[in-house]
Image (cartoon, rainbow, N blue to C red):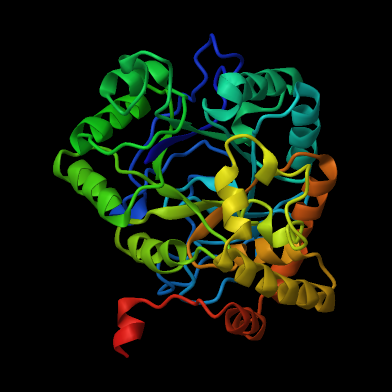
Length: 393
């Protein structure tokens, strides 16, 4: 499990300073489970259609969303083609594409963040575990150097793996509050009440504006929500989950149900399945690739497995489909993720500017994700998940 903080800058300058935002929150309109907050970038007016039952107000630059679609209201940026969606049922507006701060040089990280920000990206994701904590420092230094308005972007991070001491990791109240903006963790034994109380304290103290989960099961998210409602605390607003052609059940079946029940949205990662979908492993594992990096032996084993070979065969077919649509396989995969119900933002993990520019090009394909195109991809993949209701039917 992981816990994510979502916040705007507010003194996000270096690791030695407090780096979380200071904006109070209030429940969203209609008593939803998200934590709505006025004053964030483009957010706070609650102008959305929760279940497709009411027609949202039209705004300039907005694009109608089909009735019944889980996205609250998708709008296009004033100075870019970037699209913005609500984070779950909260009032926070995030770009449908976000950028992950990885183990990169400060100069490359600055180049990527600058290109992304100028393209309309307002969501930057990090974690203390990235680059052994250097990624957070780099992110804060870049934001300080660029001088961007703190109300114009959102920073999310994950907390769990901290230091070497027992008190420097985990999801205890002590670590959550002392860590504030720290990293991811897998947690098997924990107190949901302690986590929710600590997160509520962090928000009430102005250290963050929202909190969410990462790699939590739907049952665990519901438990946290129930604790929050029972003790009048603040529930999570989103789940950060892996999502791509070959990992679909959670985002397409389980999270939409949570969205409609308690307002939890989805922020997804790994749209290219660790590079598998780009086709670079089609002829084997290149010497210079992630699969040959220390700690990624599991990826190499996956590529060389029987299931991996079957997936690579399907990827070749998807490349042909991308050629027919006039795009790259990566752009098609990202646009396919964005068409999914309840997905607020897809996080991009890139290592150079060419990759970033290519991935941003997926925006123009969203309109081409028609029911016919999606059905063709489903037929090719042969792994479309079904809800219990659909299975009974």
